[in-house]
Amino acid sequence: MSVAESLAAARPRSSRAVAFLVFAIAIALIAATPFLPNYYIRVIDSLLIYILLGIGLNIVIGYTGLLDLGFVAFYAVGAYSYALLASPQLDLHLPFLLILLVAACLGAITGILLGIPVLRLRGDYLAIVTLGFGEIVRIIINNLDWLTGGPKGIARLDKASILGIQIARPVDFFWLLLVVVLLAGLVAWRLERSILGKAWAAIREDQDAARGIGINTTNAKLAAFATSATIGSIAGAIFGASQRFVSPESFTLQESVLIVLMIVVGGIGNILGIVAGAAILILLPEVLREFAEWRILFLGLLMIFLIIVRPAGIVPRSFGPDKLIGRLFGK
Amino acid sequence: MTLVFDRLRKEYGQVVAIDDVTASFAPGLIHGVIGPNGAGKSTLINMTAGSYTVSSGSIALDGKRLDKLKKYQIANSGVARTYQNIRLFDQMTALENLEVCFYPSDVGGTWKEVLWPPYASARRVHRREKCMEILRFFDLQGHADAEAGSLPYGRQRMLEIARALVCNPRLLLLDEPAAGLNHHETAELTAKLAAQRSPDRITIIVEHDMDLVMALCDNIIVMHHGKLLFQGTPAEVQASTDVQLAYLGTANDIDDIRAAAQDRRAQLGIRTRRRS
Ligand SMILES: Nc1ncnc2c1ncn2[C@@H]1O[C@H](COP(=O)(O)OP(=O)(O)OP(=O)(O)O)[C@@H](O)[C@H]1O
Ligand SMILES: [Mg+2]
Image (cartoon, rainbow over all chains, first blue to last red; front, top):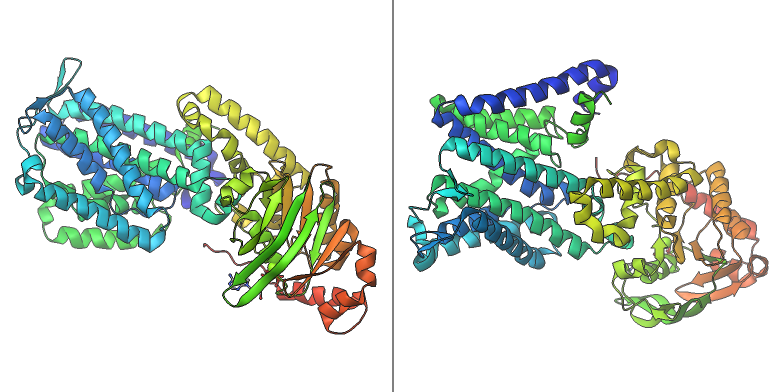
């Protein structure tokens, strides 16, 4: 039993207060963000992008139990979709929402293309092969100069706009990302609670027994890969639009590892955990910016500490969004 | 219509685990499969459920070949099973372990469940009602929200059988359902299984516990070295010297078989969890 749970069992009233506090802090942060200097808003935007990536990858890692180390590939697919369809590179200037749709579809397709060859793999083998896949995508982008501009990347991307409203300032992206994160979180959470989500959990627990109760594990896994990749790709398109520049450097293995770490540290299989994990791994390095080299050492120590005191993550799987909302309303 | 094995054979390299077994199983009856360790009983179950491939011969349920199908397709043809070593979805609750069995019928509505909450809750209520019904039947309603892996061993056995029954299978395969249970639990299990008899269902129980087999089964198949050694009613099996020879090497009383089963039960420790 986790600390949060045992506290909750012992003192329901105080746990309700904690839930209120969490919501109050979240709303206060959201309300305060537009008034912060641009630099801070950019940090918060990048935090939201990582939360979005975490929500996507968690479907495969947390819900279905498949260790995917190549997630950054889908992020790249989304970013380059925007870069190619809204820049002088191919002289295409499609509307932002249309590109989001294209990116989502391309993400789903690449998700399935990656999924098919790794269907039989699990655990370490899966991790290695997906890691390779992520690197292959990056290397292709790096070498396909005529299309992607190679290592130089693609610059001067169009300013995004939605229905005539320009999305250009960090604060515009903040609102856009907030809506997308909330939507993606809602979809992921409802998927987890759906019958498909139960099947993902069954595959995670015992794949063979899952087949034994009639689950077509191939389809269920591909559905997980596809939804996860779709979210990753959407995150990439928004990232491209907000940077207005993409290059292969943004899509290294390190990024994949960072997202996995976020999930593991925050609480695998739990959207609330991802928010916590992202907050620590994205915000702390910013806070510690002044300490330069010491930063990595400090983060490493913190990670070791967290893994020892909270092996199931900061917010364990058992304390999902439904629990938090339930607490708020005193259920 | 029935379940039919036709010259069914399973080889692991040089080892012949099932040696041209031909048998048929009628619905409405409970069929026992007994035999010494390594006789091939589990192999028979595993091939029928699609966990192992068939080397040669065929398995047909109601005239439909099962041995060509994938494991999940076999399950969707109405075959449900339990495992000799319990295989539950440990970190899911007891209720969820049953609920997920509705995946084949409900998966088509997944997006509707995601996008339209009233539909989702209606489906969930519907599924959970059915699950609670079977949980109550196995006296597990108090454990509905407990993680399956945290239940006591005996409850886990019951839950696994409940999971096999929740979608009302045409063919129920139980591999040593009483293994590791104490006397009291075995008696409870025997009563539950007797109450689950249904004229449409073919039930096959692999079991070493002779009390359970003799009390429950209408028809018993005795396996020995992968071959079908004997088939008959419990009374006929008890009277057969062949059976006693197969089990004990000597023509002794059926009571000695019981004693062997007792030893085995003592050997089977509490199941170790695969995950911490
Ligand atoms: N995966 C496998 N690979 C190789 N040989 C196997 C395999 N599974 C079973 N066998 C062999 O096949 C034979 C039959 O095994 P099986 O598990 O079907 O016996 P059983 O009747 O269920 O025995 P028990 O009462 O111990 O459960 C045994 O000789 C066993 O060693
Ligand atoms: Mg066996």
